[in-house]
Image (cartoon, rainbow, N blue to C red; front, side, top):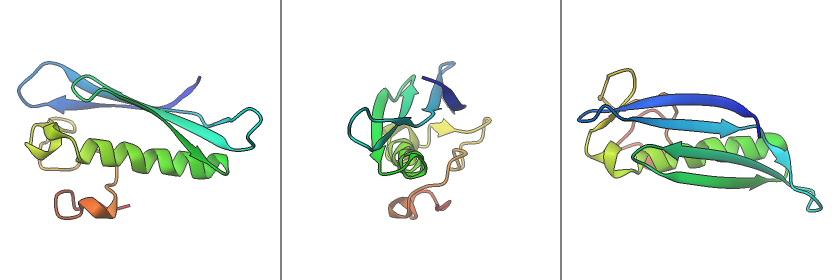
Length: 107
């Protein structure tokens, strides 16, 4: 699989980083749909394959799922997850509307 985007986030009280990767959508053999994988490592362990009718839909849904996992994590909600040393709320990815009260950076 080919990584199309990678991003590191800081944890305020640790030297460890949270690493986020999004992989290129690939066609689901025989099903006619597309799958886009994202993974989060280091404090928020997540690996998820998101399915869509087209490659663009799969990618879009994967980014929304990725954002939901990040903004919904205990690290974020406790103010310990940040971007470039800034822990004010923005993680470099727009938040789904459901998180607007906590992360006012919507899709």
